[in-house]
Image (cartoon, each protein chain N blue to C red):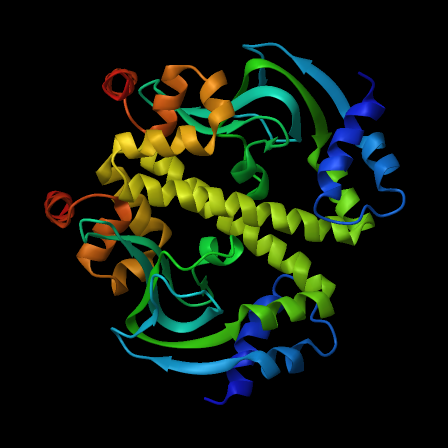
Length: 195
Length: 195
């Protein structure tokens, strides 16, 4: 696949929300790098400055943090038409606290945040579009916080596979458990009880 | 305090981030309603459509959800220069799942979301400003999710009083406990251990 054809995917996805301004496709093409990632590839390490963001064409990535005891906690999964980065670190101009790894061979568009900011300035409607994306991100984070407070482990798991069936396919048991905030053993027990 | 002087507070706060466009202050004044709230006032109830958002001049509000067992979970506290609403419900065009109550006598600016959208369209730089606010909101939600996964109850409480000293003053023990996801008894024990 050429860069031009993968940017078409991104433009097609944007066109579902706003009318594509003249020149946007060329501008996106000029800042996009097409990358093939393999399962296990680490594209961001905790402690690094966050310079890039990724739009997923296919495959699956996850971001996670490692606590002081060495335990991993999954923060986000990203599959087709999702973005992944360490958003908190980038927006607060701090070094990454997250790692990002590929968990199923993936095809992504890599962009520099600084280039994306240039796009926002040049095409103000994209900023409106990006505001919409931030609102969607906010919905998903709020939903996660509310589920964690309100629902038991089984209900959280059932909601997860209902909301994200594709991710449930790609991700390993231990990744899903660490996203739901339960142990892999509890998740296995819970799944066998449901069968 | 007149409406005009409270809108000055809001404009002053906005002016820390962007240059105030000509006409913005009058436009904000035309959509703002100054409200004095008393401790215990409920300004949004779960199940209602979310039509309004609130900018806090002083005092303190909290949003919370009540689970099926009747237990309350605090989702957000808001004090001076913060906004509060059921953002998830508004952005996803659903009925409120949260309640919002005043927990310390407060002075707020009430705005209709639809009027605020009109402001965004009329003053594009405000949209940039609002995108910045969404990014900050995203940082705080991510921080909360990461703390919940990574830190123990005591560390979460210490981080809370460090990050939000004003809220720790206003909020009752049970509200803070329900924000941290622990029982009021655990919080009391934890606080007396720290003394």
